[in-house]
Image 1: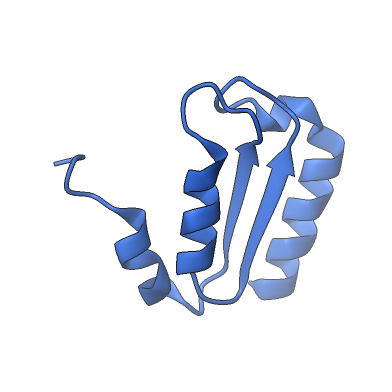
Image 2: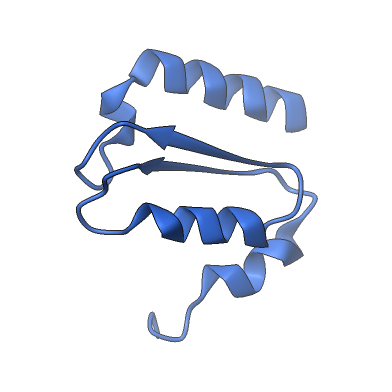
Amino acid sequence: DMDALNPEDILAGIAPRPVAFIHCTDDNLINYSHSERNYFAAKEPKALWQASCKIHARAWQSDSVSLEKRIVDYYLRYL
């Protein structure tokens, strides 16, 4: 039941597994504040990266070179 699923309820429990959020700041479908809430609910290690885009799930296309480096560096550090 997707209505009963709340990521904020489970994020703290997955630590110490690393979690990263990448979100369009002007997302047309899911407000950026959702990623902020999830980020604050998670425990370290965690990361939140903003992307300058408006279309949901297009953060990667907004700056793929930079995001790829950040993601690879982050997970190499914590995995």
